[in-house]
Length: 444
Ligand SMILES: Cc1cc2nc3c(=O)[nH]c(=O)nc-3n(C[C@H](O)[C@H](O)[C@H](O)COP(=O)(O)OP(=O)(O)OC[C@H]3O[C@@H](n4cnc5c(N)ncnc54)[C@H](O)[C@@H]3O)c2cc1C
Image 1: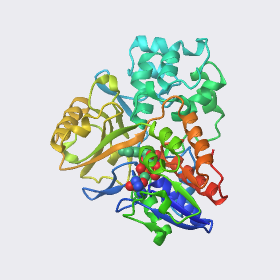
Image 2: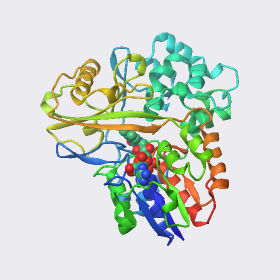
Image 3: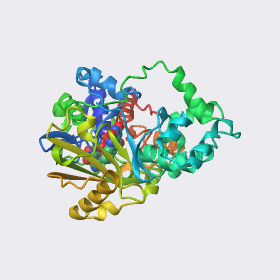
Image 4: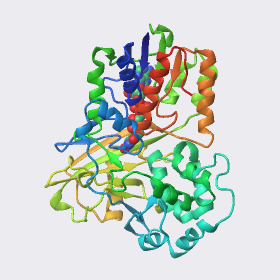
């Protein structure tokens, strides 16, 4: 079986690794001079700092499993600080615990956090007793959370967390595609809070177990390891422009949906049209290193989120050197600031100086930080985060169905399919390889 994989982001690398492991003849084609796609660790002020993804979820097993298989399990590191903050109503306030993706499970803790007003707490307290159908088809996360817990919890807790991960507004995000955990809870009974609490209570997972993992050299260590396993089977600087030119029995395309659409069009115009419907958000990550002596704000936490309703430009600030033991040193503080979300491309239009100005203005406003960073790095990730609108899972199923008819030798997958996180991408890549090995089978 000869398998060609197009794209060497984490999805394509995982697909190539899986196919090679099974004994297939594999070639992975990558347009860029390096593999990894949205995963890239580089040095900032002498530290390994991720320019894109900096962690992967522990609860979703596929990344941890791959690390175990690659012999990296012993190296996994978890955040040194668990506390996280939200800039809300004029100050940084600790996220109320427990919460699931920002949905508070304890209303007294919500009240104590000060993140929402007294009126917002009162509205949220009504949730367990509210009647009504919990999930209205594949409604948006915003519609579900606003209906159940009110606008303040939606805008000041769930939107910064869930919208932040997807660089989107929760009002545009599919519950089922973007936050299956909430969909599962909503399907079990009318009260989201009660069902999430029940799910948490019945979980056998250790509550103290890490939520996220990374690697001491950054997430790039994982893609580097896959690159070394693929060896000569990986061809860098090799953009694929015509699927017909690939000498293979099965082809797995792992490109962003818009790029995949153009490539697939000659073999399935219907699949190309459907892929073209998937939209993307752009984000910019500004990493800053400060002299520790210049930063007097307490840094006991992993960082903070900035709700869109606060009207600032930055959406989050990760205190990277507090969060990760492998980043920062006793005299250097490293922060990673996120800018941009769907519909707000201002950051992309700013030049570096203008961008740094707005970031520093927002750092001053949110954490009183006036110090000048000694090192700055700006990573622009244009059209990098796929947007999972209501109906997304049906769209993906339609793409697969059309391709099964038009080109059974072809599979198209990637972050846009069923999950954009690193673990989901690994799973999607490996599943595509397994399906490719059983000739013509399509992952559904
Ligand atoms: C700023 C940022 C932060 C993130 N943080 C996290 C995080 O902390 N945790 C997490 O789990 N996820 C995070 N994500 C999401 C996650 O990193 C991505 O969804 C994932 O890495 C995408 O992998 P992929 O292989 O599907 O696509 P990509 O990484 O986009 O890879 C596609 C590859 O295809 C190549 N290519 C394009 N055209 C061609 C062609 N014609 N021929 C050959 N190759 C081509 C590209 O060069 C690229 O290397 C983050 C994303 C961003 C942008």
